[in-house]
Image (cartoon, rainbow, N blue to C red; front, side, top):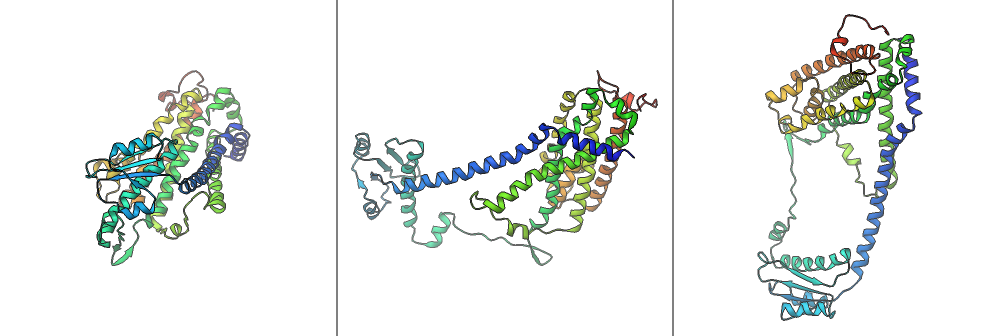
Length: 410
């Protein structure tokens, strides 16, 4: 391991010098900036357009067979009434009025009809909005009881309280911190998965691994690559979080970003779920790093290695297929199997830990399985890399990996 620092510096400097690396992760905050800019421009434009539409008057006539709209309301809006539907439609056709609203006698079975001159998709919406507002206001005004009005319009406020051991609690507060580990784990695999798969194939395709292994220990080389991947992943995560934080601090109101100060203050950090989440994150990351690096080392080309990333994505999605079982306290055979099977255990344990449905005994067993599997995966990745270095034209076979014969390039 004496060449570990050399490998780490080489991997970091080499990757940071690649334009593709900067393009790949700088494109994410750039997309955020473009989206936020579009949202801001759209909000500003839409608000201005709405204000302009509201200030622009238009004429309309009404035929109200429902008898719900008060004549005083129509008079206030300077709207006239007609004696037949055809008369109102003809007035719109001939340009005598801009719109005609027809309210049928039975509104529950017949639709309200709006006939208006065409002014484009956006401008046409103002006629429908006014027609709907008129009848809604009339219907709610017909209800004398404020209590019935609130119930009919869905304006009743419901405050729900939760108690545990005689104390008032917020059930979402302890979920947030463990959920952060779940999100972080997914982000690391998504951001770094491709680099993990191809981290060893570039030198292999260029046929420089023989020269590297004559001067470097294979274990130092693999560990150096893994640590460099972790550092590069942190750089990518910061590249996403920093622009979002800057946008929040400098343009929160303009971009309609909600205030998260009160939300952060409600986060409750419990010791055991936090420690467990951190432990599963680290052990699970080692497991998938060993898996992906090992697959990449066994493949002759980066193209073939990348084809296996879909398999990893499926493993990430599988636990969500059983989400309804994972979030209930009672364990089932499926949940236990997902929690103990090494390739689905990290995701399953993190989901159950966030939901608060993971018993201590199952958590410890699952963590031990993932940790042991991670150590085995890293060891196998080193061995596969050592034996797969010389395999340029074909995939490395399992018999070669577990052969007692040492490779000539080691």
